[in-house]
Length: 474
Image 1: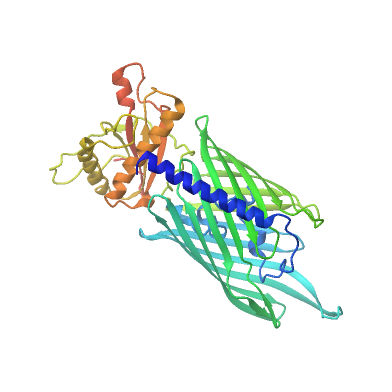
Image 2 (image 1 turned 120 degrees about the horizontal axis):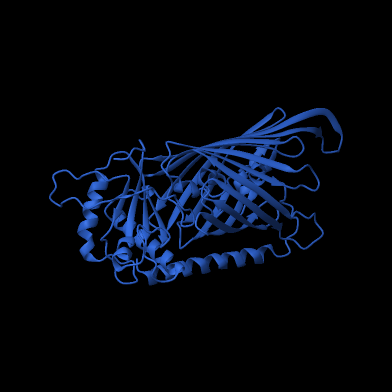
């Protein structure tokens, strides 16, 4: 797709998102406590468990959340390129607690399947009859939910996902079983932006003790922007709007600062949109994330004026890791001394496998453009054949690099567009989209000094970084 069409498409998407935000805000203006508040048959989704999402004040509908996105935007797991497992626990107020585990794994090249198990213990309540009298019985209340999700990347622009939840609600000696559905859309990286839409937990009402309680239907719309700051540091900002059936409409904003993929600091603010005298529910949220190897620990803290403060903890483990496609703001350390590769002869009987780090010099583009010149197609075809001949490839990161001619922002944008052009070339030939990620480094990582025409030509390059099961160099 040409640069002009890309910008036009991005403009339309942003305008559509802003229109939805304005319409939702108009609906929420002056929202008051309605008869539907608190009437749904489950509040586990409203409480939320994921620590990263909580630290960002739940402004994550338009954020790449990985497997944890199953509960917020069912499309998000589509961006998980490897097997991922998340487990978390929350000790809520009034003796209530939530425990949950989610596992996501790619299914061939057809998408990502997610399984989730949630247990919500609401503690005990005193049984009171309609006339207000106390029966002397103390009842326990629990929810058990089993979720199955399927998400997939469609082309180069968006992901879609759906989730089906089977749940059982227990109140004293009474039990009831029901189904809920959720759907979501999440855009791919659009020049650093992501947009998300989700409709969560819709379904038939649940009958328990002759009462019909509706499903906790919620609509969410959100956006995020990711950018690299000062080399190895990253910044993400997000905004989110929620319209639930059984509570106030609200909006949240979140920000997270990260150093590589090792340490992330987070903060968020969520405000309920009401102008009457109902209880205030504005909240500030804080948290952090630490990654050690394939493990990531996330923690979130939120104040509760009426109750004790709330702490959330979640652990994410990537096993059989495939290195999900890296966003434009998340730098990956450069491999030392990459080996420059030349294409294998077109008539070679058996293509030679690629090295772990392959430098593709000589891939030609139009001046100040990401359009690949026809003279480079034969070389890319040969590289593609060698990529297919390389065993155990789990992911390929395509990096774009420029010389130091021009401004920093221009070089970063141009290098990213050219990396995307090479990725699109491989996609058109049939390579699995979930295995391809792109990065643009501009002039940040030169191979040699930019003090001569020869040096600048050498620094204008495309690199392929392969992640393999054995993690062994060829």
